Length: 281
Image 1: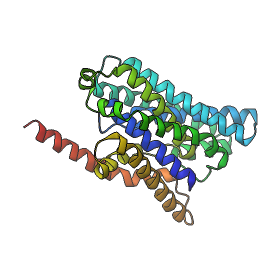
Image 2: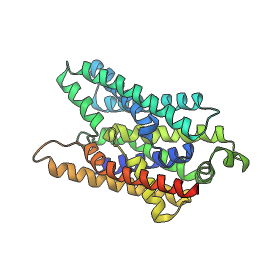
Image 3: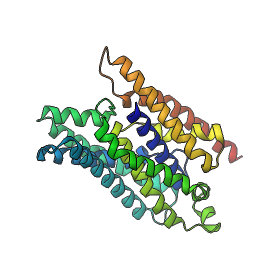
Image 4: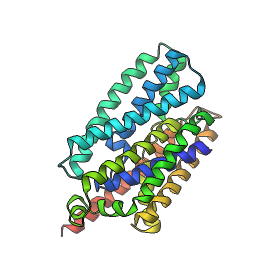
């Protein structure tokens, strides 16, 4: 239960950061490619540690380090490629990278099937399975999750400005490039923690900030803790549903978040389109 709450909270904090950095309410670590890169890095850490036959704590640390390096690497590429771009180009570049990472991860997963245990571990990690997340994983992922939460909360004023858009934030005195670079480091931490504990949990990082803003308003001093709480509770509830269904068939938590989040995302997308349509009249 602790791993589920930490994974959801970390991903929600990362999603809040991404939406502000991209100045786009439809952004999240999955769309940006950060989750896919973190998963690919976690795969590499799992593969190398399995080949070296190390202890379980060392294996967990290797997976965390791989996930963190993957997330950071993807964000550096996105920031470098979109240094002079705005939110839309930022998202499109991330989406392209997410597609590339997904393809590479599929190849790695297919090759890993020669080792049944390793192959199953990689498949379940990608689907979002919290059943295998124990104290070794939680011990190394929790500092990253706390770092993402603290980093977002301490920089809440910068998040407020970034959410206004590139030009508006810069006109108000914010060094946008430097602020973005600082924020994505915390995005990487939160995403890596979530991937290590629960794999790729779709829609959590996207929807939790929106629910938080409906509850507490748009100021990030309130949005960050509210979104973290919402994300943790959502993944915890999804994990309980998965555990209940496990008596009949093995269902990963990521499948529950996807099935629940997809219609909510569609509703959110339509609401965003209607708001944009009214704004242009």
